[in-house]
Length: 232
Ligand code: URA
Ligand code: SF4
Image (cartoon, rainbow, N blue to C red; front, top):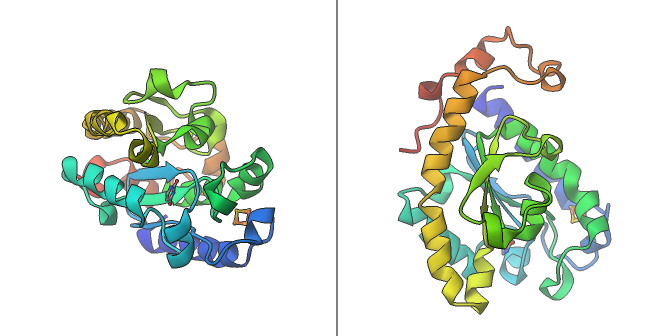
């Protein structure tokens, strides 16, 4: 897929999400929040769901937790424009309550399609709801700051996933802020590792090959790390 094709797929998902009524969260939303960033990225950050400010603006992580995410990105020399940022649910749970399992399930196909379009090397999970998709069974207190192969059913079978606490947690529990910054320092190394794995085994799995034949020249280009967006 070219970057233009990836962007077109993301735009189409955004249009669908804006009109979506697959779960009760559509009832209270002002704007849905499909996510934003560059279609050319190797790294996707996945949070929980929109909060008050995100619901107003239709953009992810624009409130206080978003400022902290910006600081975390800056701390490793990255910026929002180099990554893609989205959430497990695209509409705000009322009063910022946790998303319910049926809401997460209803919204999951949108995240799956975003991941199909982006084919990231690394997924950074922000909080336990996101971690639950990419690393089911893990406990955040044990795995934060570390990476592992993403779960085969997560939609990114060729990616690594790096677990972090949710930035909003640090707003309530100050000591977690230091932990978040310490953990973030490991993210670029996880990307390096993820690139190396894909270079060693560049083939997409059989299911994905049906959509993108391995003989297509752009697939060969994707497996060449120098052809990808340089984050360092
Ligand atoms: N918290 C999230 O999980 N996502 C956002 O977009 C904002 C706050
Ligand atoms: Fe649709 Fe997801 Fe919004 Fe529910 S949260 S209405 S599934 S876009």
